[in-house]
Amino acid sequence: MTKSFRLNTLTRSLALISAAGLLAACNGSSHSDSSADTTDRMYQVAITNLTAGQPLSPVALVGHNSDYHAFTVGQASSVALEQLAEGGDNSALISEAGSHAGVYGTATASAPLAPGGTETLTLSVTAANSEDLKLTAVTMLVNTNDAITGLNGIDLSSLANGESLSMNTIGYDTGTEANSETAASIPGPAAGGEGFNADRDDIRDMVLMHSGVVTADGGLVDSALHEMHRWDNPITRMTITRIQ
Image (cartoon, rainbow, N blue to C red):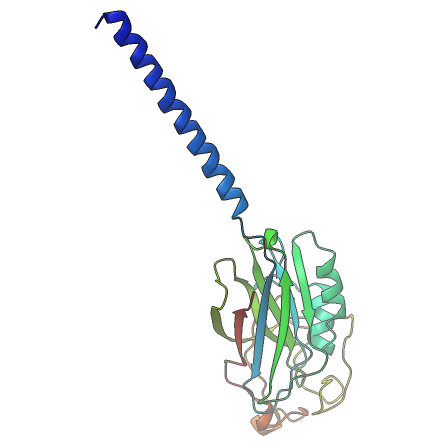
């Protein structure tokens, strides 16, 4: 066998191997594209009110990416959050979220959640928006001046279909209204007073962990609240289940 014949044979063999490798690579790429998960995501969020005497305002849910924040601990509340925190009205927060480029979907409850009660909301987002998906849930403790509770940017991107994630929530003071607890300033059934007021008269205009209510039973003479309106964290139990 001549040297020339051997070189030609080796060249043809290498060409065949290269072509086979290229074909396999193309087939692998095509297979990957065709198997991409394009199914929209659906999540059920079950909220249980754990308090003895704090009805919760209609819960607002926001599905979003890392660019959106309904509130940040240590920073001032937005006007939309103030309206929710002082009067239980989540419409401005939902509307504001809906116009934010980083928000993928919203949902809202239609009625307050009584102590001991549980309700379930459904949030849907597209598959394309699921890679950096966070969940925020916000609601007011209505027998307070401006207390809220909820989840703040919980990561759902790795939650598989059928899996659940449960978390307890604590109380936050939004810092928009002094915690006077007077009948004129508590909008809930304990007093029926004023809800949202644009004036911010709290000592610190920032969101912080709530220290709880004092109540008349605790010695605050002008308070419209009583022992049953106190709480010890957690305030709610939230379970998120991916159902699609």
